[in-house]
Image (cartoon, rainbow, N blue to C red; front, side, top):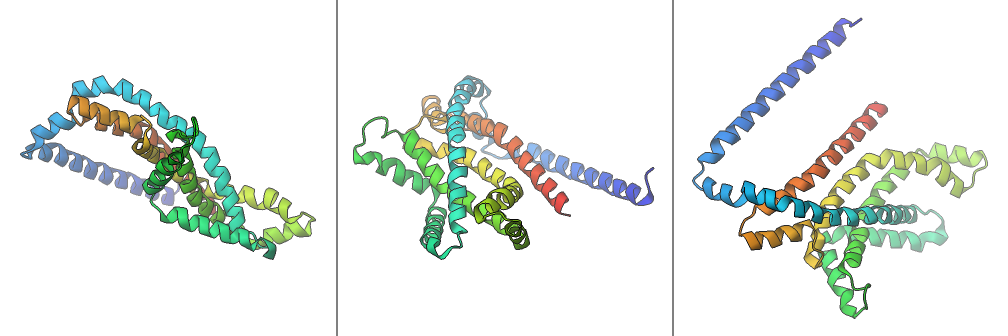
Length: 270
């Protein structure tokens, strides 16, 4: 049985959805009608929206995207592991571990302060320049190292905020029950902290999936580099549009899932 308040809220939701739908349709109609009226639209359409080039390059670019997926797949566990280690180092309280806290703070400051593309250039070109033999001069290895170092700094701060969000009374209660500091962190604090920061880390992983394409600047022929090759061969920018579409096929569902987790977490707290 629906009461008057529930009926009123349902009416308001229908009204909001109707207004949002109408305004979105008006904006899309304006774009569709007004953009083709621009004087340079025929040239833009030929350069960026060539259907034949789209169909020709899509399979190869999708195959090149698998390289991005592989780099992403082996980077994620390394980032999460190193990020957790840095977060624990930042939260170390024992006086003897003060140097570890300093190291964690310096690490986070350095790798959050340097743009990711600059880190990729410095590590991707600098370390192979030492004359290392194969396979240790591979851009895949050092590009992955640059991504891991950069993103683990961000993940460490997210995890640290989750650890600090656990109320001190829970630590004290666990210690009163006989748990050691290590077991308190392992069985009481970390499970709650990690669960609370899952949505924020999902957003980090979405950003990482996009930034993997930056490794193309140091050598790997992944989707962005392959799109550049096609652009030069075909004298057309449509391959870049294909690359963008392929990225959206992955990042949009991942972003929506992160939003779902954020909303679920907010509802659980309210």
